[in-house]
Image: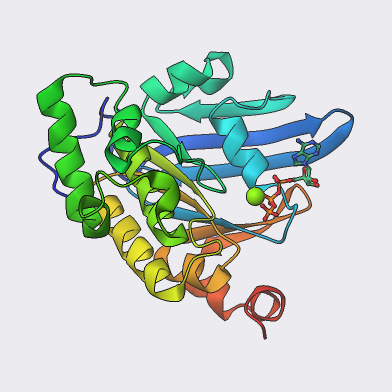
Amino acid sequence: MKTRHPTRPAPSTPIGKPLLTIDDLKVSYGGIRALKGVSIEVKRGEIVAMIGANGAGKTTTLKTIVRLLPIVEGKITYDGRDLGTMSVEEVVEAGISLVPEGRAIFGGLTVRENLELGAFNHKRRAEMSETIDDVVALFPRIGERMKQEAGTLSGGEQQMLAIGRALMARPALLLLDEPSLGIAPKLVQQIFEAIAKVAESGTTIVLVEQNTRLALKYAKRAYVLRTGEIAMTGDTKTLAANEEIKAAYLGG
Ligand SMILES: Nc1ncnc2c1ncn2[C@@H]1O[C@H](COP(=O)(O)OP(=O)(O)OP(=O)(O)O)[C@@H](O)[C@H]1O
Ligand SMILES: [Mg+2]
């Protein structure tokens, strides 16, 4: 992705310093504790992966960051600001976009209309069409299907659109929830190459993935979640060589 269109707003945190800090986060559904004290740090410019089995709390963590779930205990800080006091809208305006699990595109709208909905924070026509150009440069398949109803896209194309829609806000922090889920390997490859380009252009990324191999390949550091707790963390090269990780998540 070209860098002529900077993220908005640009974080005041310098590159390489903590942009997002999750400190001892506890979250519950009714009486059931889904996160039991999760601490995660994401430095500006990194791709950080969050891996772990079904139900470990990955989606819960992302939803809590964007304020879709209340914080029971703990603190989330983004670019020096306490997210706990912000609304969902304020979090998005602060520069954070979530690509949710299952994509959640609007199937009855065209591809272009879906993208335009993501540009709620810069409605000026020129700026919007420039950002669409950036998304098309990243995902040419999306560019070829602008007038197509989004519901008729393939699963992989829908994931590209969901990521594109999130990028329309020009986020400084992009949260991705299982971008490879249910997608043909060839398109998964394209999607991950695109994610790498987005990171190169200066967007910080939190990547939730059950495909541990992919997550460890593309991320610099990773956190392993197990039943609501961080079981392990480290740089991805070290984790990929770890016997426990190999046995539990990489099929031996
Ligand atoms: N709306 C909900 N109501 C009650 N419990 C929930 C709800 N959503 C999630 N949970 C529970 O919280 C725990 C964490 O779920 P979460 O969706 O965060 O896991 P995950 O790591 O994203 O799993 P997956 O890989 O399957 O997406 C699970 O035990 C789950 O059953
Ligand atoms: Mg999930």
